[in-house]
Length: 108
Image (cartoon, rainbow, N blue to C red):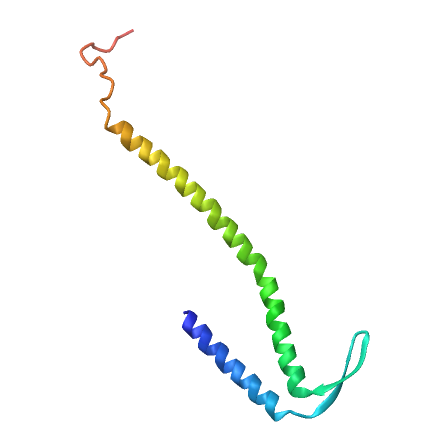
């Protein structure tokens, strides 16, 4: 599945690169408090793609942290369960306490 995502990403990246190289005109960009930045459309497109990728990575970072914490919690639970299983298996090897089966149940 990762190979498919990689191939699709490369196709999109190639499309963006071709589009950026076709549009090499110089334009003026007004960005918030910064006035009159003159740059090539190709540079602006490439910077926009890079900044968008960085922003999406930061947004996705929260999900990765939650998944990492969940994995850590599950590993801890697994370790506890394995220790309990080991204790149960070792106690199963010991002779059980014999119960008195000769006596009949008491009737009221």
